[in-house]
Length: 312
Image (cartoon, rainbow, N blue to C red; front, side, top):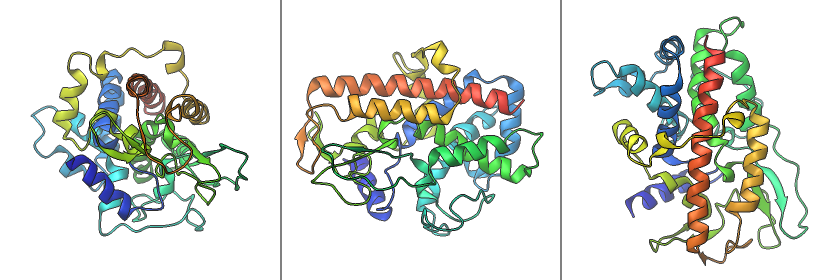
């Protein structure tokens, strides 16, 4: 219940944006599994960049001796969500002139960078134009800045890396790649990736569908807890992604995959296209957990392959 209350609090504070994909636990597990796949040279380069993040000292506080680089990398996965709660960071809009700009550790939250909402009509409800700035547009910019042979500053590369670790996870959460419109939800944003759709899970909690998917790996965790869970029997570290798919490092493809999975799995019956709560079936919850594990493992493999190429 505590996890649900924290999530609801954040949703109230950030009503215009999506919920936090995978929450801390999921993002940290993805980062940890990816880190284990990186070569020592890529790890060192990542750490050199992450040291420029203003929260680096907090990330490594309490880390076991010799594990500081690992802890920093894993904790960096939650930084773009952490700033949503910082009092010196400010809300901005996708229509602002600064929406596309990568400003090294500027104080804008950029909540709309966390998702790529492809629009879907459930019943021929007219669709608005999609937003021009989103997770895909910004991640492509960040990827272009990360190699050492670009004209980007080290601060900009650091900022881009902090966001990249996070956004790769975001784009593999199906409900961060879709917004469904219907006669019951016709306004700008539609169901906002399931945020406006209520479901009741097997534990008896009634919560937004988006929150249900974000919380599949658990709620708000420590680095130690996320590593422990990933390495546990049957944990994320044991999931082997498709080797061919793992080589795909194109954010456009990732978003399209997640959009397709949202249509076929996240919005599968008994989920409705209106605000009437429904009780999830055992089949739905089993399929959701299985897909989430596959998507998270794929995100980790793709993140590792992407950073290995960019940070050489």
